[in-house]
Image 1: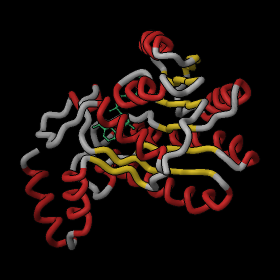
Image 2: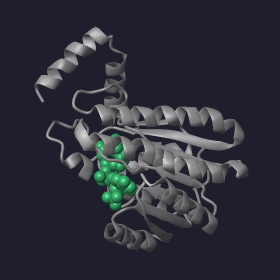
Image 3: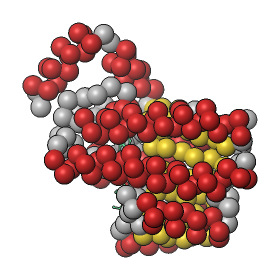
Length: 250
Ligand SMILES: NC(=O)c1ccc[n+]([C@@H]2O[C@H](COP(=O)([O-])OP(=O)(O)OC[C@H]3O[C@@H](n4cnc5c(N)ncnc54)[C@H](OP(=O)(O)O)[C@@H]3O)[C@@H](O)[C@H]2O)c1
């Protein structure tokens, strides 16, 4: 049975792509949206659209790698109105080495933790609330040239599994989200084929539905998810040969 729509939703990485689509998807039914990102202008434009749809919208400019700022932002949001749903969505994709690799791990892993930690501290005493952690099909098996990104998304998925096992008996809901390719600024830089590329609105609809049904792991699109699962279950010797071909072709 789907649950009642959440009244107060906080989304990190709301200024673009999937986060913005999720904000608009929740704008009609939620009473309050807290939209967090770094780009104030993009957040303000989105806030206007979400307000038109009916929600009270609060915008927070913060970097998810700043642990203290994230605690302050989440405490403030929760003081305004109890948070029902927190979506740790902010993330970046970049090359596999140097400062970029460190940034990917900081934003995608620590950034998620900095979101989840203070949200849990608020929800735990109430014994209710929902956390959604943005992983990816890229986290199912390490791919050449994308080690830090794949590792970050695997870490997020496993973190969600642990938190769900720990907190579900105490009334909290926790889900991991693993989309395939979604047409956003993050993927528009890719120079390789992206099968079953989806629009962010379509992805957001699937996520909203999965969260309303408290699915442990929201995975889509189905055909790419099947391939990702198959790839993850291949013996190392077979995977090594396949992935070496991919590495050579760039
Ligand atoms: N697109 C896909 O195919 C796909 C597939 C699977 C998973 N994902 C995941 O979905 C999430 C959203 O990606 P997207 O495709 O929507 O990318 P996007 O359009 O580039 O959006 C990324 C969002 O993250 C925010 N962000 C980045 N660094 C941040 C930081 N340090 N602090 C706060 N916010 C930060 C950005 O906001 P500011 O620029 O305002 O800071 C932006 O709103 C990511 O976690 C990504 O890994 C995407």
